[in-house]
Amino acid sequence: MAWKSIIGQKRVKKILQKAFIDNRIAHSYCFWGDEGIGKEAVAIEFAKLLNCKNPVLDSNSSEACDKCSSCQKANIMQHPNIEFIFSLPTGKSVENLINPEGKDDEELIDAIRKQLEMKAEDFYHKISLPNANQIRINTIRELKKKLSLSQMQAGRRCIIILNADEMTTEASNALLKSLEEPNPDITFILVTSKRQALLSTILSRCQKLKFDPISDNDLIDTLISKYNQSIEEARLITQFARGSLTQALDYLDSNMKAIREKVVTILRLSLKKKNFRNELYEHLEQLIKANDKHTLEIFIFLVIVWFRDAYSTFQTKSTKNIINLDQIETINRFAENFGAKNIIECIEVAEKHFSQIRKNVQPQLILMSLLLNIRKILLD
Image (cartoon, rainbow, N blue to C red; front, side, top):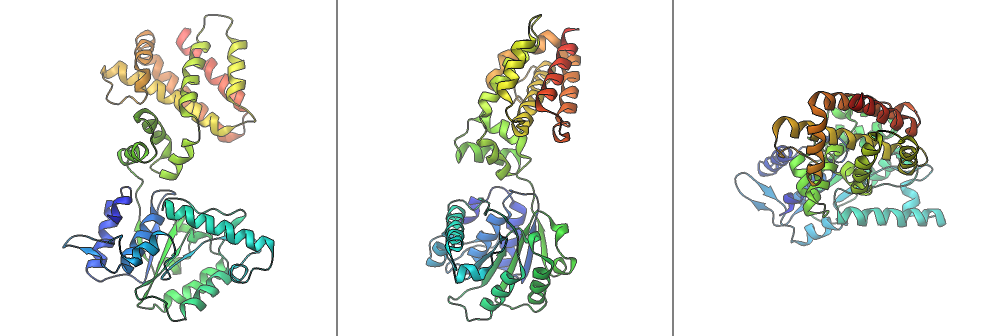
């Protein structure tokens, strides 16, 4: 059913389901928490439930049927009672969307349509428009004008404000007036990963629901079942994601397997007895192009994970907590050759170099320094 499409967030889902069962729907909510953990997806599912013609109920749960005409409209992001507010490009307003004045407006309308289609395919998709970073007062004024008109379909009108922290001060104050005079048939859902950026007066009028990071197990299961990742790749990506599906998906575009293979190759080169520098530098040049900090971050983190695996297998003689399961034989030999003390030192050095990535140090210098330090620890 509908709630099953939401990854984790059991606590939040229970709160919202109980509110529906008890008919205690707040007139305004603030869904807050880290980026990419399902706040927008939950907002859509909740709005769908509030408008469902045949909700599925029992004493402890409630969810949209996902079959009625209302649910079908919500699933394709075309429900007249569910309004989405988000940032528009600089110089553009809702008026440009209602009454296009040229090619640029038509292109913007087409871009928004495509983003909503992508959102309909995956509620976790993040709507993104070029040069869009503010929700301006004209957008809120147009919303208030629309809400003053009779609604087209029975049900509860739900206003979902994505990245609500992007409202300008003027837009926030305009919205505040609506929150101060709640309409019993309207629910506002403000979604944000920067709760502190919202006006305190707005927050005071919202029921605040904190969303938790997605658990590693839930994230791994999702990457395997929905995105066709192997268990090794899913476990690796989860190490980077910090409980965020959108961060995990960012790493799907990176060739993690190829970078992992590079880690082993480059570590081996750095530990050659002699004549290693030129060959090592050539590999680093291939790995890091145009000061690519994203690839550098992945590489060093994979080095850290690789050493952690070596330490774990050395200490426990078990593969239970190993991330690089497909490299276990190599990891076992490495752990036996160098021992726990040296491995811990390598982890500490790698973590220090990882912290240098955001300090504008050249990637090649960071990597060469890291590998020479590892070489000194393991071979001296």
